[in-house]
Amino acid sequence: MTDAPASQLSDWRKFAHGSIEQLDRAATAWIDAWRHATEVFVYSSNPAHVYASGIMRKALDAAGANVTAFCDQAQKLAQANSSAECMKLQTEFIQSLIASMQRQSVGMIEPLGGSARQPKE
Image (cartoon, rainbow, N blue to C red; front, side):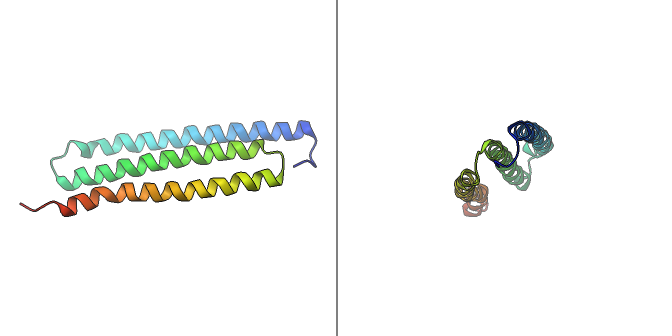
């Protein structure tokens, strides 16, 4: 990262930050649109629709959290001053990403487990 002139590096960082912010806004708008689309199922009397909308909401929440995490990571990487710092940031990010994915997957499966345990009438 040190072989480029400081002004050129600063310009690239500004470009990266702008691109990351644009991606974050676009992804947030897309996820919000899907959230609104799934609200149709919330008022359904069909239990399958209620469970499906719950799972969809959790999936959209997870997607939103993941987009935010990826954008935050990209911002940090754009500010890194060395390859070693990039590697350290990326290693920490991957560790937190794996833990987050485990929590999210358990959270999405829980509603299904609860419905399977409910007695049939």
